[in-house]
Image 1 (cartoon, rainbow, N blue to C red):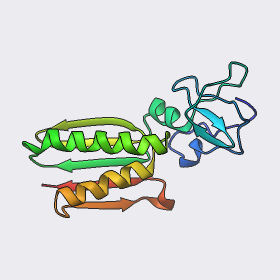
Image 2 (image 1 turned 60 degrees about the vertical axis):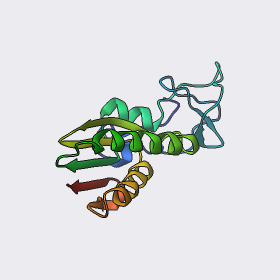
Image 3 (image 1 turned 30 degrees about the horizontal axis):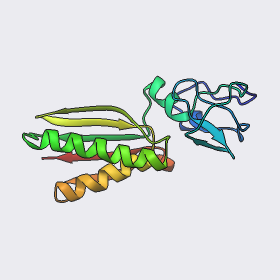
Length: 154
């Protein structure tokens, strides 16, 4: 684990923070992101560099989101449109911030449930949903901003 110890409790938000900078060339065996200058980026992993699971892959593995999006009520024809909206926002956000990913996205005519690996993606989705659904969406921040919850009822 490259000398970086983590708290083993996935419910602890600090579990996914590094204690210090990982050495350059460290790569995630799950997604292939590489550490350069202390940041996880896309790039060619060095075969000699150490392996270390990135925070996004760890959250996905543990199914422990930083963002939760829930809409309740009959979405009807909006179901497909909202699902596509969320996927498109993820694609754009992930290009600049590769640790921002969807963990889960379930869209039905009766509601929508999604989870994210980062708070930024959840906030962007929440803002877009507020515009799309004319303010029927509330964005709530958890303690110490370790969780963003987006809720709405139609």
